[in-house]
Length: 464
Ligand SMILES: Nc1ncnc2c1ncn2[C@@H]1O[C@H](COP(=O)(O)OP(=O)(O)OP(=O)(O)O)[C@@H](O)[C@H]1O
Image (cartoon, helix red, strand yellow):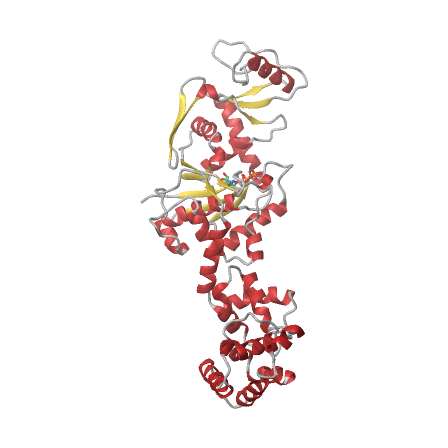
């Protein structure tokens, strides 16, 4: 049996955007596919940029999408003792060393290397080697701890998305793993966490490719097993730039606010970087069943709002009308809808849902049933002509007794039209105006049926 433990490890420096959400979705689905464990880890060691609000925004985004974690959330700031312990063990084992070079000295050595056309790196002044005498320890200077990166050879891994990636150790520096005040640094924390949390598969954005060889070397040095790595191509915005918080990407939580359904967003993100034949529309259950690491796209994907809107329209059409009502009601309330004595909201939404792309559009469209109609007088003069009035009067009479079904109403209107030698629009247009205040509505028989006998009578009689 394959044991699978994946993690999503965002930094709480802002909301969750679509790039992060897709990373979370793939890690989650991969764990679900294998009956494994999905872990949420908050990488909050960047004290200047991390905020509790951002943590909450990430949790909210994950919750809206339904990406439930099995373990965590773990917070790196709460694991400081553990990192210190590993730093001490590495110093003890000789896989890390104290470095007393000052920041100015390090900058000067980098400058020298740049001038010599070399890649700037730490020159190893304080790196202990057999037979080497280290400089005297400067007074009053706190050391950093550096990782003793292998000098030769290379780091290579079979990336499950990108294929084999090989980096020469000469390209890698003796990374600082703990600062003078003892706080550990990013790549070190990630390696220790992945070890402690027994992560088997690291799926993350390919903005992390450069971190991977460093983390692999640290994992080897501490005797940890290596997870498999898969670096997913970036999601780009409409401008072709990588979506990122710093670049003003939209928060996942803006989508419910605009009236998107989570299943539409999930379906959209699932396809943005992965394919299963020609399948475009599928549930998350289906996705978890299909999703393994085959068929991941190797090239960056561009975010396309039209496709998301198309999927949202699909899922709105599928959605239960009661659920649509729960979502649309607050939007309509904010627009001043009057529900009291009005038609049945779920029925109205069921009538309107075919053509809208978002819940907000649906709510807007449904408003015509929930506010007093105020038809434009000029339109009224145009449509409520003397030729039409007698037909409307007869219509009003028949309303009182006709069976209140769409079919019976439609048949009754036809009879009235025939009796007065009129065509459908000649009665439908004034009816739309007096009943809803506007000319564009769904089919008139459906509108009448939903508005209800009493309201129809009251509104028609008002103009006769
Ligand atoms: N545009 C993107 N496309 C795909 N994945 C992304 C994108 N941006 C970030 N990720 C991935 O999402 C995960 C969480 O990233 P993180 O919380 O660091 O956000 P970030 O957007 O990269 O941060 P910042 O905006 O500050 O650069 C990481 O695995 C990262 O690789």
